[in-house]
Image (cartoon, rainbow, N blue to C red; front, top):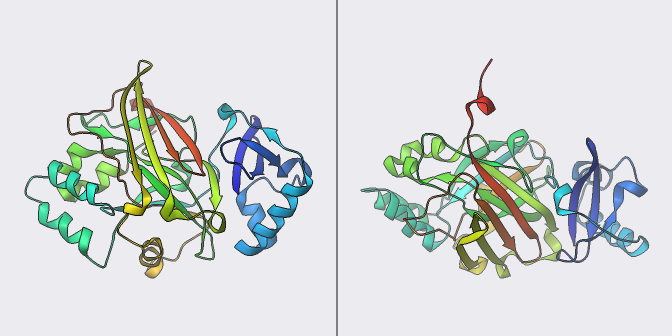
Length: 299
């Protein structure tokens, strides 16, 4: 079962639910209940995952469905913060060794340590959604997308559901010095999530397939696939460490680490399009653009 959010007309958002994430047959919740236009509205009325699931099941059974145009899809939930985890797959450890000369020991320790690597990715207002243009740093020449299963954590601290995340990163900046990680990860248009939220009780996060393709001038320049079963860390541990000394405020997105790393010679270019598909969630598509100074100018 999946939740979708789309824009009917500018500023007019609707929330819907589907039983088939691939068919995009969505029952429009907002059309029947105009006061429910977001996941937050739904949570305020029911306040538990069990109650939300029961209500959505009954709603889906009683209402007709419609097809939602990809071009109208928006960020599926308004998060207050977006965080990310690193080196949770073996292939990610190998990639970090490759990009960071002399720092192999740090990534080996992170991979095998009890404490995970967690870092802030974006404030909620700067998290992008389907179709939005992501940014390439002007001071980086080695940028790559990082497709990740992303947890949507409810205000209660429970995992409400799963979505797709693109943790766009500047590998040359991180590779120069691990202390530059915040600059390699946190910049204009560096985080995107969507297109839907698969409710936590309706999908097994350890049995999913993550696929990524990158197109340039209508030509595919990269394709890869990985299974979430290869993730080393339990998802509950990532949430536990994030919450340990940081009370979560509102809804939180937590990207769980990448396992699809393009080869070292690959560089994203202005105009590329990144498509990430995860079983039972859908496909998140974002173009990338070199950051224009006007986007981030300070008055």
